[in-house]
Length: 209
Image (cartoon, rainbow, N blue to C red; front, top):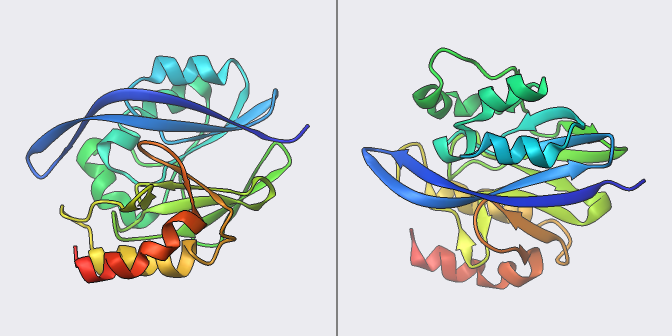
């Protein structure tokens, strides 16, 4: 059986630098009837556990450690008996939310995760956060971009531990090298494709932030 993608939206808040915002987050599940990889764990562990539906969770893989993406990762990990994976450069953000609980394993650029017979390639894409990663699944023609790339442009870089030139470089060198038909499944909002976003790159550069 080919791995399939499942999607749910959870609602809550994002807090950083003394500000709090209401946000809706995408949660992506990749797997089959037996096992599943959970990408991010925001807001509603009950909804995510229900979507898992008793399957073996190979891991909870975090695109980055802003609190709206990892707030319930430790609780969900305990409930489904799965490790939390995070790029080590995002520990500075993780520790703001979970100072007494470390991620279980680090993610690294070029690492390949496997679930339901499908390979998931880890791409380190700093900029929105220093340890931000995207998950490319060539077999399915998708890339899960977290908050690195959205329909309409790069993720926000106006807060601590972010960099606009860095996120532009990540998008240009790591995401826009993927086939143009690659579906971009984001951390918030609707999907897009690599080919739909790439023509706007020069405009983003000129925008400067």
